[in-house]
Length: 63
Image 1 (cartoon, helix red, strand yellow):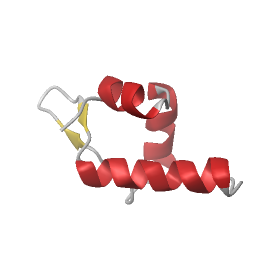
Image 2: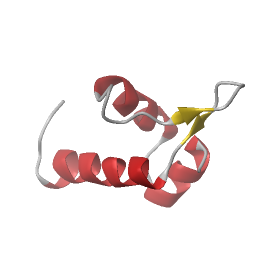
Image 3: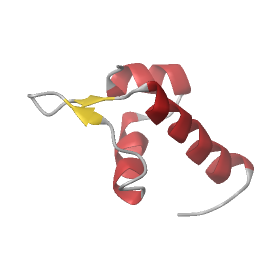
Image 4: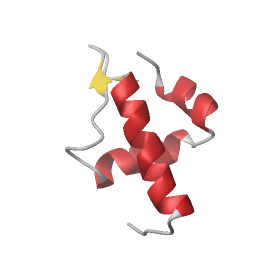
C-alpha cells in the first residue's frame, strides 16, 4: 500500500489531481484509509489511475 505522496512521485500525478479523481470517479477509485484518515493506494488502485490517466491524457476524454 502506497501513500498519496508515493503514488504522486511514482506516476507524476499531483496529490491534488489524485484527490480530485477520487471524487470524480467515486466507486471506481477508492483508496483505503488509515485510522488517521490517510489514503493508501493498492496495486489495483494504481492500475485504475493508469487507466484514468490514459483516457484523459492520451485519448483526450474529459471529466
